Image (cartoon, rainbow over all chains, first blue to last red; front, side):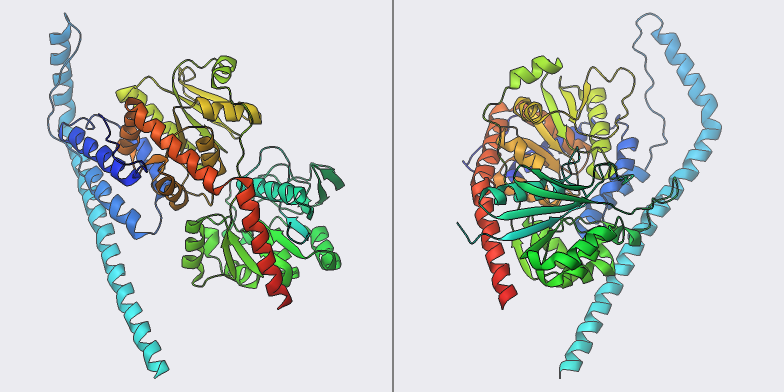
Length: 146
Length: 385
């Protein structure tokens, strides 16, 4: 990727737009799907603060992460000669395990989705409540002045 | 020169090994103000370690580079093993009754007492003892302790409150609900050594590949663990042939086989640190809790482009104003930003040049000291008025 430099004073936000468009293209190609970001996600929690900008960024990530794909996936092996046998073995293991792991994982997935929705709903509810309270305070202050 | 003033600085640790931001600021201000003919005294404690707060250093007085330093005994009772410090206690501890007595008995000898940082018993008690002469340099972060009622009292009692950056001042106004008196934004001066030797650094520490540099304390709040995890993920999925070098104090746990790509050099001397900045392909500041970030400005002055957390208003503001680096909010942004900087050396050089010029314009000692003297003059006028 080549970043464009158009001005003597670099606009960092413009550069970041280009970085993000590159990320969007890689996401569309499914490049990040194989990444295990669970450890990083736990550490990112340190960055979360009670701030609207952070919440609006974090909530879609939470929703995406809660939506675990439980479906079948292509099983392959890179070994040239024994590859076919390894694939058959892996498929067999997957089928043997699936009958009970699917139940566990689907329950976890349902919990994740409900928790994510609940968090979003609570935030919305408290935002509305805060707005109503702020309006009430402003009205009372106005009454007090007049 | 401005009128020569008698100033006392109060901080929990001073020249006690590895220095945090507030300690570096106090040292920089005290030594440079002394260099301009002001009389500076530092009132501090015998502590070296900011976890145990043991009285390790000898007490009494000494002269360090033109600054008189007095070390007092401190009192600190750590929380039980494994228990976190209750937030309220952060405002009460560590404390030093001996230092407090000194403030009460000899306040007439000084025109100003400058306290830094805010979240210590020394600062809260000290400001309560000499409110009319106190200047608070909070080095404020968005952390639970900042929301305590005692912090509001401390900020409202102080004669003046000075900040290191505009975002820090905005944060204070947001948390406190009022604008503290004074409100000047000053910061710290940055000077590099006369000669930087990037190749010498590579030779000395056996570094062959380009590298991302982190310099600072390794603590959860500083984002070191997040940087390590992001770097490991980068190596696993899209290794761009770059290493990670960590400088500073604190423990880092490296996995098996990581030593070849992650170099924990620990605490190194000043010249080595500056050589590392000058050799770095990217300087990364992952911390979300900064009131100034001296290391970021040092790295820019040495010619490194920066990569900072999108969640730190202070470093993000520096980056935007300087045009000195990129930022990341999550792993994909980290990966792409690193890759882009490595694949586009012209952009990386332009960012590094933007950062350098920003530091030279705003954070040379002469500029900072002019601001500092003018803020002192203003506080002095308020004192008389």
